[in-house]
Image 1 (cartoon, rainbow, N blue to C red):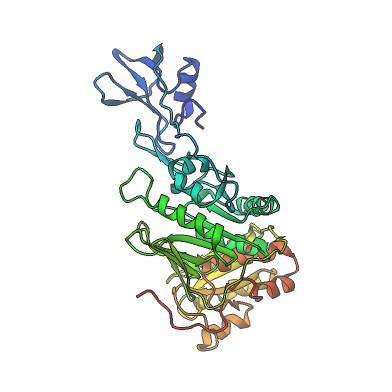
Image 2 (cartoon, helix red, strand yellow; image 1 turned 45 degrees about the horizontal axis):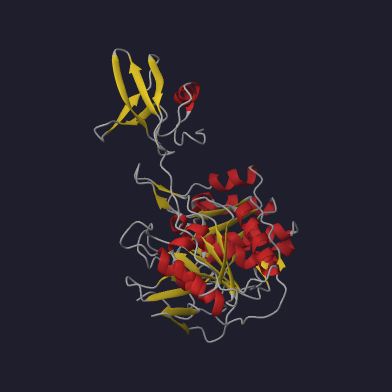
Length: 442
């Protein structure tokens, strides 16, 4: 594990550098057998191997030197350490609505280290504010860091923390809340907070970025400005996800937190509302309400129900799926499984015995579809009816990700399987429709 002052270095090489009292930027002389190298110690990417030291030589070129048993390091000088200094914060206007920006990490809260070329989740919300000073013309900004992680590392513990922080910010008088988040799992988090914080009196807007702030096509500033403006002035409440609608910067869309999915790896319009409509768009700086009906701002006190059961699995069925996967989850003590089945909600007959076993062991079982649009209907074909007879609950048009998060939440509220099933089938925040309209991306 690397340490502060020597990011990216691990194992025996790290111990050698610590013994030599070397930090990033220090000038060292490295001797390997009869070869001698000199240069400034460079940081390394955390995922890189643990047996190379990287030096920047006087020529400006970097060199990687393999660690061996005949490896010697001598510190011969110190260099000015690379440091990022954000511009000074602009003054806020106390007469404007109060918006809290909560940073959890991700590309929108990342910066490029121009020494290494790497992108790091290291920028605070205050750094964002200093880079986008026009935010202070929209609202009185209170920016804090809750987490500083890429979204792959977000889990239910983070959702619990987000819910607690949201409640605290509301108690402190926030008129709106913006949460910066990595895009890859942002849809899971918006669903989780939709269930974990109920009776929201103000909007909670999740916002991310597909392009880091150093790139000409960066979308972080436009997304953040739109999110803050909606958090401060939009008439609706609830949990939403704010990102680009298309390739241009003139339109930002607001997706409902339980009906949104990331559908593109890198495009700025990566997120789509599935089986529903976005609530609003901001076009050329003006907010346009799209939804016919929407929850309005209120003076309600939020209800926090932020417990999640970790032992829930989301399983995608595929041809040749091995039912031993289900059996292994039973043996591991899992409490629930959400299936991502084919078409209208099917898995193969080979899974029937394992599913029956899961039901006997008291697992909560739900079915969603791999298809993006439409809903499960397990009454059409005999295979669907066979599955419902074995205790698999059809979950309407819920997204697999939303159904997974909701099952975690349901089992976090009660250990009674019947009560958990009732919660799963209760439509709390529009996570499913009783009838799906024909909707798809054109």
